[in-house]
Length: 199
Image (cartoon, rainbow, N blue to C red):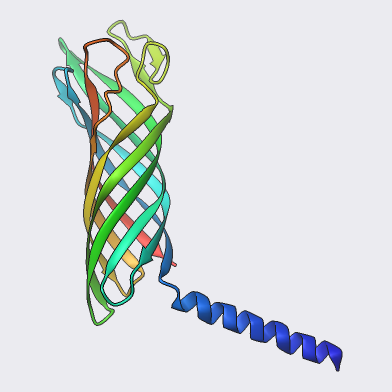
């Protein structure tokens, strides 16, 4: 009898916790997508470079009024191509990036929604290579490369279907001068499109 009572209590607790979670305005998700990155500043003759990003998100939505905050972490590739003479050299950079969005969601019958969001981001360089004009490879974040820490602003607009599937188009505007050379400015620029799923 005691086993039955305990089993019923555990089942009730699980049911209540599941119901409570369903009522919470928190959301967790994953996403993946494509980047088109470049740099701004004093670097001449640069071209955009195609990359990717994958990551996880968490968001908090204020019920009814549609205001939300969103953060998470992404593994994202950035960089640029540069033409020197008749040759093109690539700089590859991989970052762990943490954004903090604040936004507004317009919903239609809980079926479709449009989301607008913007805020700051912080990114930390974890890897990458680049070639110099002699064809020699160097670490992107080595002594002769770029600073690892990057800070900037990011904004995106997106669509959401049934509160689960989502697509976002956005832009990262780096504010940090990542160059290690005095009086020489290099700042990250990155446009992206991602597809995600919210649990």
